[in-house]
Image (tube, rainbow, N blue to C red; front, side, top):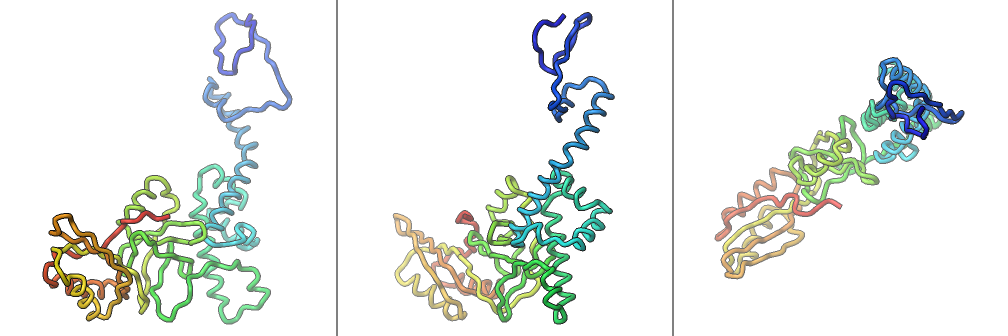
Length: 308
C-alpha cells in the first residue's frame, strides 16, 4: 500500500495498492505524454488534447495573425477579413476552414507571416481590379493598405512579391538601387530595407529570422539616396578641398564630412555622405576620387551604425 501522495509520473512497483484521487476540474495536459507508458494511453491523451486545445490554439492564432497584419501596416488587423477573404484563404490552404487555419498558426504548424503576405497580396490584386470603377460600398470592403510616399519617378520596391507597401531604407547600410537587398518587418516602419550583407541582417538571421522578407528593386528613377563613403588618404593641406571639388564636378552634393587624422599625421580617414541617384553615379564619383593626389582607397561605409 502506498501511504503517501505521489506524483502522476510515479512508477508503481509490483504488489503496491493505490487510491486514485480525482477532481472534476482536472484534465490531461501535454506533459502527461512524457510519462504515459502505453501507446493506448498516449493515443487517448492526444485525442483529448486535439479536441480541447483547439480553442486555445484558435485564440493564439488569431492574436498572432492580428499582430502580424498590424506590424505590416494593416491597421484593422484580422477585423479587415471579410467572409469572402476567409473563404479564399481556405482554398489557398487546401480547404482548411478559417478556424482550422488559425488553430494551425496557434499550434506553430503555419507561420503567421506567410498568411499575412498572402492576404496583403490578395487585397492588392482586388484593389487593382477595381481601380477606376469601384463604388464607395465596394471600397469599404478593402482595408487601407500601407503605401510608400508617391514621388514622380522614384525607385520602386516589391516586398515578398507585393508592390506599394510601406518601405523604409535602413540608415545603417544605406542601400542603393542595384544593391542586393533584404527586408526586415518593423513595427510602424513597414519593411526596413537593408543591403543583404549588412551586419544587422546577420544579427536578425540569428535571432528574428521569421521577420525577414524578400525585397527587390523593380524600377529605378530620379530619386536621391544617401551614400556614406570612407576615403583613406595621406594627410596634406588642401586634401578636403580637392575631394569636394571632384565631387562637385560630377554634380553630387556632400551632405556631411568628418575627418580623423592619425597622431603621426600620415593617414587621414574621411567619412562623407553623398546625395546620389544610384550606383552608376556613385561609381563615377569613386573613379574620380581615386585619381585625387594622395588618396589611397575609396569605399562605401557599410553597417557602421546599428539600426535602432
